[in-house]
Image (cartoon, rainbow, N blue to C red):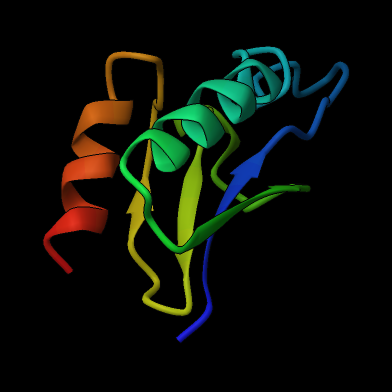
Length: 87
């Protein structure tokens, strides 16, 4: 199975300035990629556009499983890695 973590990096401007891009979505990609390599997980990290949950961002989604994480930060990455290891 080919699994991917999609991380939203969409930048929106007024009237809706709340978005994953402004919340640091792009900054999460190298950290998440490094942790996946460290744990030798067969999961690709992919930048994506809007997931339609801007106010809850940054958002990440596991494909094809469908699991979604909201308000992702570097502190959330261990939870994501744990989930990947145990599924």
